Image (tube, rainbow, N blue to C red; front, top):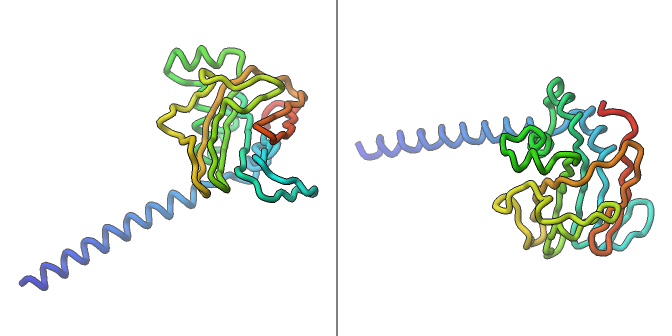
Length: 194
């Protein structure tokens, strides 16, 4: 009797584990950007290599961290309504424009959402307020993502996402990004979101 019960428990556990893995695989399969979204995001993203040695031709050595800064203007939400094949961080960033929280809506008047996707390569202390955009320093009040959802002390391999609201930039404008010793340039696309 006991072996039969153990058998049923093992089968139940195996079935539960299989269902969990199937759902995890299904979620992972949908966690990507369509080719159209990849192109849109690439045109709106600049990468900063923190403490990296730039050798030219895109080769960077010994960087402490990678920081990708992506502008998500409000018009991208119109595209999302017809093409939902995009990563969750993009959807989360666009949702700030339509927040039910009055404080968040007030923060976004005359501002754009920028998403900071970061990854530590070595131990790194991430601080969004070290980022400047055309001389504008990110202030703690500009950070939209609650502190509970991101870490600042990162061991190698850790990554995260933080959304910030900064004064809007005009189409065609060049934005100089700086974080510590790292710098990059982001050219705001001239055309409306495609």
